[in-house]
Image (cartoon, rainbow, N blue to C red; front, side):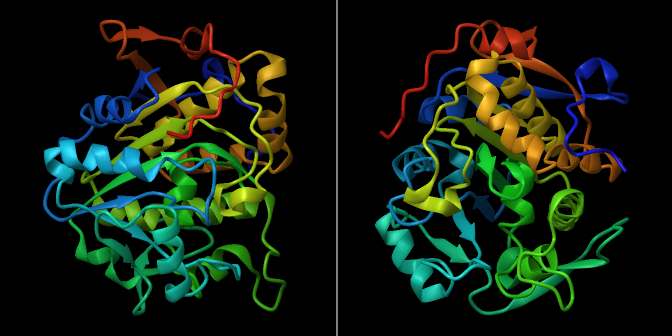
Length: 329
């Protein structure tokens, strides 16, 4: 088993390369610029999976940004934001609580489907070691395509939360699927940790991406990156990592790997806290296990959308990043 505490640089990785697009424009226009490079197969009834956040959470992708993107992208004009209830007790634990939190955070401009509000559906986990199937929100199978819009940040248990966490935890239903991921049979509610947790998150994700096939695309927004997940809301640790930009890909392993690479390409002072969070939680196992499961490539070509779509390195992408400034608008 790969040690989830160990960062593997690009030169030590094997396999094919995928395309990952990058822009420094952290705005609705930047999201659109990135999305338009990967949206060719986003058709039919579209689900937008994002983290809508705990009440007044300061770091989520702002709802007004998403509203602007949806209003200006033809494939998203009739899309539905999708979520599931939480495993932990809080302001999104029941559907009623969740609906109230959605209103507080401004997610009332379009339909929001709490997919496990009326039950669950199980989908196969092909090639899984821990699971043969995963329990998801019942209505997920009603959609033809999924746009995964992720606020990339740290995570209390996962080390980091990228597209993999957004789907793996976020599409699993709150009572069954999330329990399978987080708890051992007869064990405590949060008894699954480190490598095992990263693998179970990834297997849950695999069930979702296998269901959608080619009709799925990913955008990671690297802004307001606390070491805490957005599920911690206003209690999240202060942000000290500089904002970087926005990534897009049709390869989930490549986009999360590139996001982590951008963090590691920063200077020690800028990335210390987030790197410590990733390594101490064995978060790199998310990346290596996705690759082992055939979910995508750990090697990629990074394309700079701001400069004639030239190929760049993560170090070049973060060159001259500004000291952190909270982006709230």
